[in-house]
Amino acid sequence: MTDQKLTDALSVSAALDIAKSALEAVTLTIVGEVSELSDNPRYSAVYFTLSDQSSALPCVMWRNTYSRQEVELRRGMLVQATGRFTLYAAKGRMNFDVRSLKPVGEGELRMRVAALARKLEAEGLMAEGRKQPVPRMPERIGLVTSPSGKAVHDVLRTLRRRWPLAEVLFAGVTVEGETAAEQMMSGLSAVQAAGAEVILLVRGGGSYEDLMPFNDERLARHVAACPTPIVTGIGHEPDNSIVDMVADFRASTPTAAAERVSPNAAELATWLEGSVKRLDADLRNQVTQMQRRIAGLAAHPLFTDDAYMLRNRWLNLEHTKQRLIYAGESLLAPYNTELATFAAQLEAFSPLGVLSRGYALTTDTSGKLIRSVAGAEVGQQIEVRLSDGKLTAEISEIRSNNAS
Image (cartoon, rainbow, N blue to C red; front, side, top):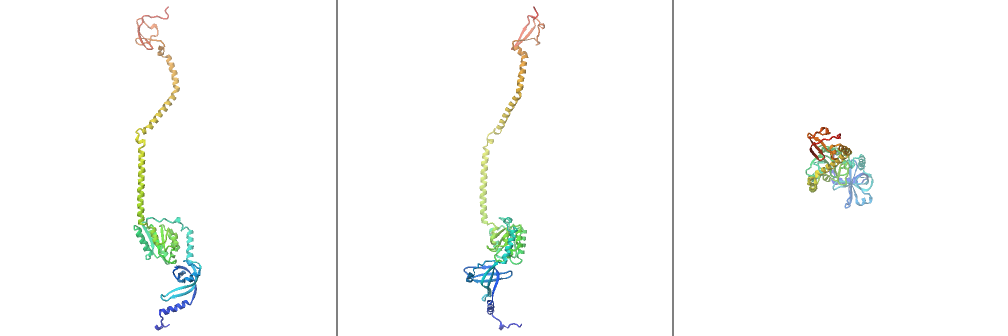
């Protein structure tokens, strides 16, 4: 083939006109998943993207045509669209101009993600009971995200404003594409090994296809098994991935994730001030209670009555004495009767008892008892003992009972 002569070359406009004529002459019916959607009522057309596993096609459907279809597009829908390619020559852009549309079913990607979600949920990886609490004031915060995206700046700015005391352990990784899941697993392991107390796994918004690495089963299991709490902030508010479901806490955006792991300095100061006041009130209350208790103890008779401690002992001793007396009397009663009998008998035989009845005892001056007149002599000095005293006498006459 010989080179085309310069005189045979077409202008850009002419080439685009030829392409436009060729494209618009062909009507096609295609099937794809709605991965992006812009449906603003103020616009004259609805803009969306149809995708499969390897390609994406921008589509446009005029508002009046879309309204007649009675179909409400949403991301993830699998639809069948009939139309033709159009070329906007001024910009060299190609769209698929959709003339009719009907739903086919859920998109393949969403079906696979939903099946994985059901599988992991059945295994308990999404259960609230297995999720770890997020520390209130972490000193070391791990951050796993793209080093070039907007998310890293949002997170760092938020942490610097709210919790500048924290040390950030950053692992820069790819967050979309075929190697993203593996890189994020490595990043999580790295910051966890470095001593992070909590880990932020975040990225900014994107299409459903862009966020697919966060639906990777290996990454989801890695997040669920991580011993360090993981907080996710993936995409925008409506976006929800498998990793969000198994993470310990799911925030709606990267900024919200950073706010979740960082106490607000102003709120913290208010809380500390309130804590100081509560502590002061508690201490004052305890001091007051202790003072009342001490006053009550000081008024106790133990400290005001010198004899308080001995009074009970005295009463016990008195009771013991009475019991001993009673016990002694009880023990001696039988013997008292017998003793009285013996005493009466002794009294009967006692010389003093005889004397009390009018008798007398006669002894010589040495105290020797004179029992018979035979042992006495006239002129002998004698003593006569009566019951109430003694008489000294001299024998002037002796008479015997046998004398006539």
